[in-house]
Image (spheres, rainbow, N blue to C red):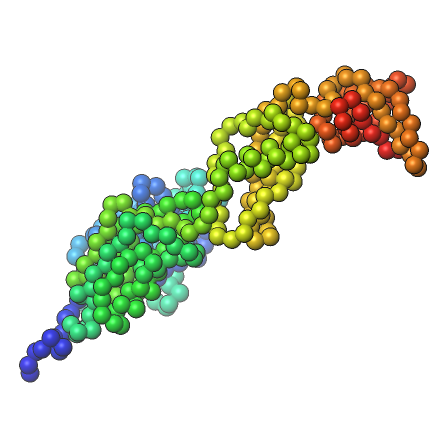
Length: 378
């Protein structure tokens, strides 16, 4: 037999992977960037000498593994065994944690503001492990391919900054890929993770790329992967600047309430939104003393995308009527109008409703028409 470039066999050994999920109240614990994250189910493998999610984060507390075993077994009580068909050994036991509240994280993980209650599978309602794919065991896979149909000569160059459009992003969206078909198409379509929120950048490292390639059952041995530091991914979108929000609110106050001296308070951030048609709309204006709050709706493609509250400080001259001011009360009933004198019991802007008292000490609610004039409809 003659070995040529097209018939040379390459053997590479990928670590075993196994799918497990918790039947009960407990959560799996993982460590990512110095903090705890959680999951009800996970795909586990061996990475960097530890039992870990195929997405990268290791199980916590760590379970260490030497070498690359042929088999990986997780018992219902969390006992982990590794080895070969001839000999298996126990490396430890996976613990669980009970949590009262969680919130979504990237890649399907969960976060929690609490430490939780630790326990072992099978104890105090924590639950036990099961595999959605049958027996909880996995074997090392030997990947057989020819050099002419192998990604071993592929080169992946991750861009320093990438903009992505969807809820998830692929390798083809963040990298320059050099490879022959069919590997070029397979590599482009590998899902790397969830896209970050608008206005937020997400870091990508070498470990994540390798983990995702393995999940896609692509042999990584020999693939040249270049990841700059930092490598960031951000969501395609648009920015509605703080200055645009403030100007729109001030124009509304000037038009509706004849206010020309409203000064913005506090730090107001820009709004990051998906691409699309945007409009601004004022839904409510409240006053308290010389403070004024403007509720603003950001409309995206004719639906409310976000609501912001803008807070302003007013001078006393901004109010059309002040508490205790003498006012003319226009009493209107059935087309008949009568004017009486009275006093304001609160300050207000043009167009706002305030209580007033007549000379007969009758308390009524009316709308400020202009400085010193309040209309009451009976």
